[in-house]
Image (cartoon, rainbow, N blue to C red; front, side, top):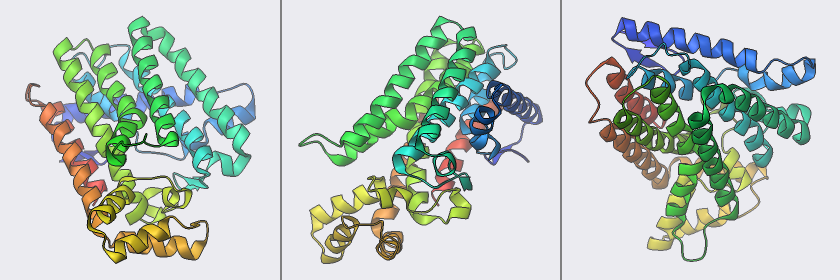
Length: 336
């Protein structure tokens, strides 16, 4: 058994591994080419997070989805470049909104160059993604545009919060479907579509990507509480400090409202206080790490990963399908 980097996905099929490794290498070259600029500073800023590494989760899904058609079709690698460039662009913008200082183990672009330049660099990456996308045809442009609309809508819904009477957890899952699920769904969809896979297969891989994307973000929610910065590449408790509601916090609040236990209510009160204070932030993080709400958030991650796995049932048995199943396991493993 060998391992397909960078996500740690094991592959028992040597031909599959070779295809995926070659595809990911070509994507990496495509990303570097797409982020070049005649202006040295723009290139440095655009390649800042790219060179810091990353899991390349979405390009990996594109490569695996393409196995259900012609994995060597000319649109496969560019579609993976488009999806990853779009994802990178959102990271620049997210870090500005969250006032994050670290991303992928390096200073965030906003911490290094300021908010304005970080936002503009994200815009530059969106522009380059659109340039690559234009060569993939009107269907691909439409798919990406729809996903981008959902992504932005999810971000707006997160910022606005749930409307009166809406369950905060249901609202949050809708947010994740837009912010994360939509782009992961596009990775599955474009990979299969560009490879000429059957329409039924394209639909299955789109649904799979949507659910896996939500599971992936839920795992990130758990990591934000449970991990150290070495594991996650980000400062632990970033969302907590900024008052961004994630699943562990939402599960805590739901439990506090339902059971009314003094310890839960006290922790909610702590979370509502000024967590820019390092001592309060450290206390909140420590208490959440041992709270049942964190385990409930892990179970939520498992549920979405299992839904993603179930969606794959109609696909023919092959190495790529086994790898997609294992990708579900890898996402769950991230959440502990």
